Image (cartoon, rainbow, N blue to C red; front, side, top):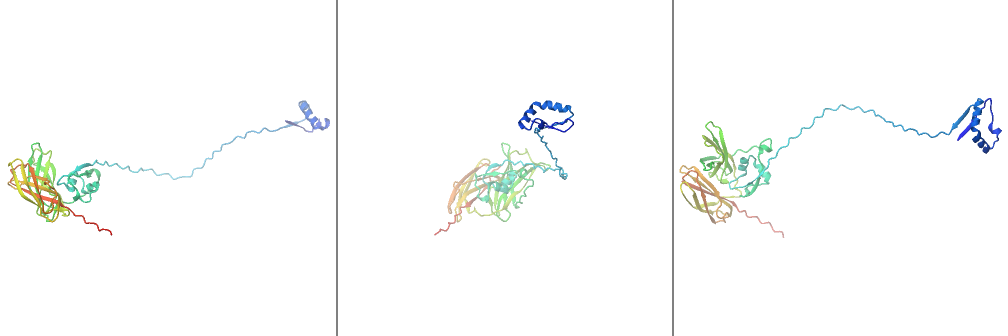
Length: 356
């Protein structure tokens, strides 16, 4: 819609006075003569001012990006990464089946571990409760599982006597001997180490043997045997020394067992059989009874040993049982033999008091 306003000038006409004041007439007049009137007035030097109803314009949206002034920060120190731990390879433990004469100390020495490691791996609180044929875990070796080796207790200084060696037909080498308990106290977990040397004193082979009797009384003797599976063809000399041995504790051991009616027979250089009986001369029943036979030559050197179970390994007090064992002497001939028996007490449980 256009609204016309005429400014005063030399050719001023009041349109409304000339054509009347009727609003409708003025509207028709304006609709018909608006354009010629504008031209006429322009020619008379008039000035026409028109005002249009402004069309709303879209106000552009201005995106204001405020750039924050960064807060000053300290220059970070160079990052030193924490040292990465080198993973320790845990050796795979293996299962070992206990044999007669085995001790935790001897097994620890043989397999390069410690008694504490074996006890921890198997939850052993009292090694005297272990049984022949029982399987235990051997966590070995210590050098691969710990940076600092665990100190091993110095064995008691017992004597080692009557040592001999004998090569076997299949290429092995046996070293026999006897532990003499000169410590003045009961001895257990006793073992020895034999080192074979050449003429220059260089080590050729090394082996460990364990006492065939678990508890050795003061002044008593127990044989041992060391087997070298791949021995040198010959050796010039050897050394033998205690490898283990601690003060014994009688505890559950039972020593009131007496070998009787002993008899040995066989060929001079071949199989040799020892028979007899074992009598329980003590006040308690004996369980887990074993016996050990030691063969000697004419010079008193050990030429064979074996540990075995009698016909009955439970002997009541006052009772006895028979035994028989066959050995093959290393060398010979057999001049004499010794039989040692040992058992465990049949501990009688203490009855619990009755609750009224």
